[in-house]
Image (tube, rainbow, N blue to C red; front, side, top):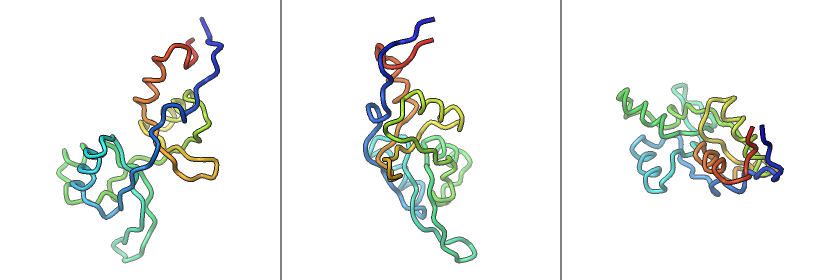
Amino acid sequence: MTISTTPAQAVSAVMHHGVIHIPPQATLQEAAAEMAEQRVHCVVVEGLARGRDRQETLVWGILSDLDLVKAIASERLDTAVGDLAATEIVTVEEAETIERAAQLMAEHDCTHLVVVAPSGAPVGVISSLDVACAATWPGSMRSV
């Protein structure tokens, strides 16, 4: 068993800065186009949506590429993205370690975390691919 003596890397070292937002009433086609144009695997769904009872509620979630594929496969193309943002929002602070981000992903069975500043404001996204890339850097993560 070897444990690296190199300090753990912070989430801020590998995260994607900036958050791509899409309104909850956007269509699947609009979400897919935004994801393709930005070359990302998720968008944050944020805004007010009016339910069947005509009440407005705040929608806050992540629409991942997997959510999009599932909706297409089940022929739910006419559904608003606010109804499809099935992925639970899990946040991590940018100063946390990559190991902590990986732990949160495993605990919540998700592939994307919204990275937040100490104030709680979203500042970016870290994906499971970002964590995997960090694991390949010599001395960047503990090896057991």
